[in-house]
Length: 491
Ligand SMILES: Cc1cc2nc3c(=O)[nH]c(=O)nc-3n(C[C@H](O)[C@H](O)[C@H](O)COP(=O)(O)OP(=O)(O)OC[C@H]3O[C@@H](n4cnc5c(N)ncnc54)[C@H](O)[C@@H]3O)c2cc1C
Image 1: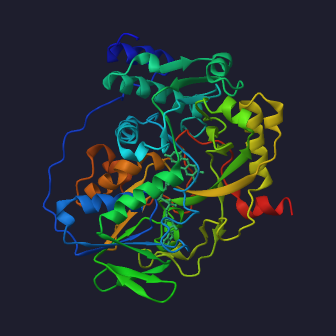
Image 2: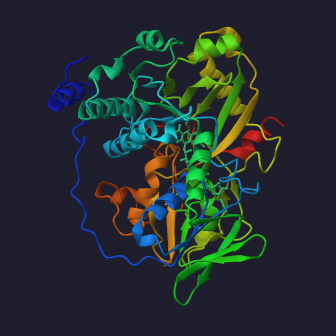
Image 3: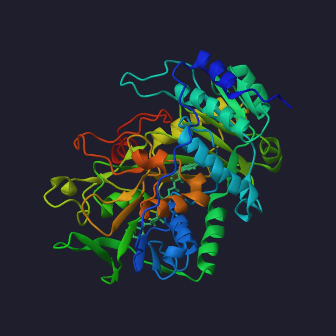
């Protein structure tokens, strides 16, 4: 066991690597509790991580025992929540408390304790494989001053050590790997980055199985009505500046005192988020393995190079997943009906980047640009030629709801009463499934945690013409790629 270094020593050692690191682990003061009058009915639109977790938290709060709770999802399969093309559904998602931002690191650590210690993480739903966060060396900031992958990785390393220290884990569980060779030696794969660290306390979850488990927990409360259906638009009472429910595609309406828009990357088609969030398409590829290859690879940690965004999750059932955490593709389309905006604001009539998935087109494959990038990732990460060139058994486009800073949006709408927004996952919200709903309900009740008040609030409109690009240092690829342009290059 490594001896427990005092925090000041950890920080001073980190300061040699990254000079601006002084802001770790500050416990904010408790917020005073305000009196709160709960609505008699709540409609949650979207049964992904944000929606389902919020529904469960509402059923657990005494303030909401008299509240009727309905959750609506466009899932076409009766009784299946969320829809199979939701961002929350996949073979795997990384579960890490490895964040450059200490507030998210701490919240992720609380979530991770639930993955580790409760039934949610049992029966293969959570695997603590270890996680290598790495990057290629280079400047710590881009030309616009935003952090690079290496800056993110180094800050995250400091936060990971601080968490290990405060949680009583040996500091040796966070192992510095300061070069391509130590990275390759410790992970057992190729020389896929220049600098990184292994956090033994991180891992991955079977996302689909975890969502199914979580859905069962919500359903068995008997408190939540699940409805298969698509909200076409929000219903309003303009005189009162109030949202009163949702109109569905089949012409029916669901009324509610409070509507929570938690429709993931589809949220901007319901609520005008042109100054807040944008849907970006991300690429995933799956390759089939032999039994021998499965055995060879199943003990590797999760691997992520933040400079390229490319990552690999250890295989299960002889399927290996490679993906890219990137700026992603934009898919601007004019909506069939404009999303609900602030009256007089013309931005709601503009084209909106919208998800396009395998449920829209069963034969959908990712663009060649994405395939090429995943292939380069495989070649760099896996040192075995037969695996490097193996064709993808399938590919998938999965949609992030990106904000400029990577912070979520958990706040009341600035104009419409009765409308709350819980979205902006920015490609990293899955791990928070066991805790995020509690935070959403805190914010609904006016008790948003102090350290997240600025991060999660509806942001003032700076420049609505400027496209939102996530500059948190965690993204690979190229900003601004248009999905249709990429498809048309190879027609
Ligand atoms: C490729 C990829 C990799 C990721 N990797 C990780 C990771 O490793 N670790 C991690 O923590 N996070 C990861 N994430 C992020 C995480 O999965 C998301 O942040 C999270 O799942 C978002 O949840 P959500 O509830 O906002 O959206 P979703 O899960 O997309 O749910 C939204 C739901 O709303 C429904 N809906 C939409 N429009 C309507 C409508 N009009 N009416 C009714 N229902 C509607 C949809 O059908 C959907 O079911 C990843 C995401 C992607 C795409």
